[in-house]
Image (cartoon, rainbow, N blue to C red; front, side, top):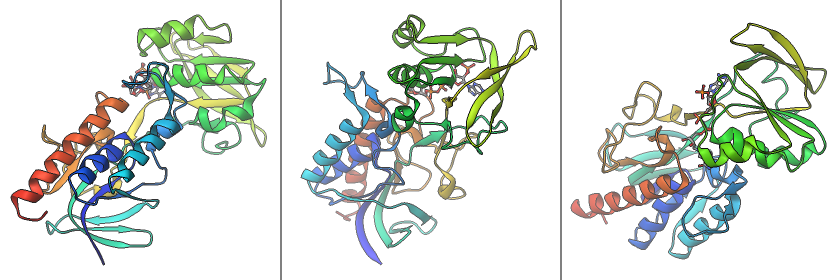
Length: 309
Ligand code: NAP
């Protein structure tokens, strides 16, 4: 079993910032990436609100810069997924990936959140055949096509706008008649010629033959049901926290988010949490990065107070 000072679970902005700070505190941290280096931001096309980038940047570029900066100070980034943890016996904590076992004096959980599904017929069956949760990954395949985007939040509009670069037309299907997204994105989306909105409406079914050919829509105000032809359906209806491996070990709220206090401490002493896995409210790259920094500082203090660093 490998011995570590700090294992950071997850490699989004929270994890990579926690890595940068613990590395600079000489703790030689190990980051276990999860199934995607960079987490959700790595599949975000444009990031326009991370300070220091007045021209904006892309998610993958920001992740790459964060990784390089953390590694420069000695963080190690391992591409692997954590399959099991045991926090019940206290420090050192047991962490197991698909290929290694570790004992860590402290752990920072930054495992983030994943996109929610609609749960309608056809959604699962057509994943990779017209149904997608990632415009950055799949937008290119929809050149000149008709696309439906589901949701009315920032993700739906941001990714929908990205899809207008490829698609013939993007129809945003939203269950209410007001957008949840902020004013900047809303204005940009509402004035985009290649985008239109279908209000008060939900997708009841995704239909096709081997690939997506359309959706069945229901207007929630009138009850009217109609079919709409579409080649792609991109779903952006929120997220759920990636906490299944921590169930029964760390205290969570009713929605499965880890409960962490202002010092990023979880219910287990020596285990800290940062980023969207414990934050259902702010969920920004900059807030996740800030929380990663906070958790790293608290880990350093926690270890040195116990003579463990
Ligand atoms: P979100 O803000 O929770 O929006 C989810 C959207 O999906 C809402 O419009 C919601 O409708 C709709 N929805 C939820 N369940 C649905 C269902 N079963 N069927 C149909 N529609 C459903 O999620 P998000 O857009 O992923 O954003 C998450 C967080 O990240 C937010 O805090 C957001 O501000 C942030 N974010 C920021 C940026 C940016 O600043 N550039 C970009 C992306 C995300 P209702 O409106 O009726 O609830």
